[in-house]
Length: 152
Image (tube, rainbow, N blue to C red; front, side, top):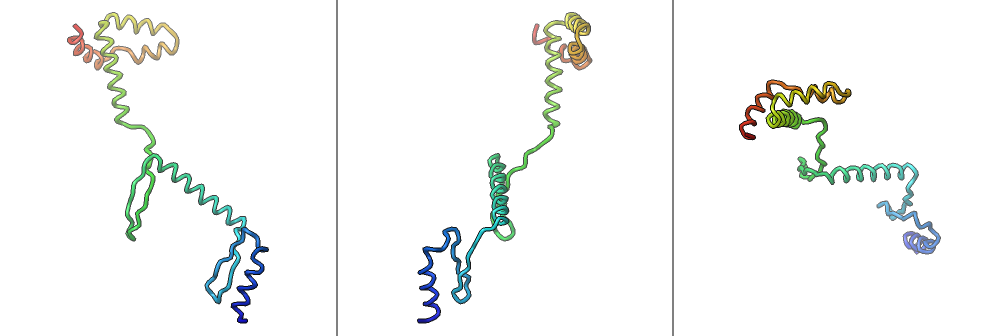
């Protein structure tokens, strides 16, 4: 019996007694077999890789972009979320607020509008802050003049 046949018969004879979690892997040298065992460090690095994949998958749910690398590999990356405030949004808010004030002033008239703002000056701190924001200014007066034509 050759050495190779003897090893194969020995492996087959003891196969039922090998632990189930240790697979045999052929190393490529002279039909040697190595036992592959995952250690605690191996589990920790595996768990970390799985967590990274889960985080990337969650980020990619919000959109992704595909790029081709120099090697021709297609790589998908999640789109970046824009944080911070938008200057355009702030401008729309300010313009909308002045239009709102001008519309109220055009509807009520400047004397009634000023009386109501003066009444707010006599109230609580919150009402006083509202009176400060709603007080007449040149922009509001001009918008009210333009809108008064539409209301009357």
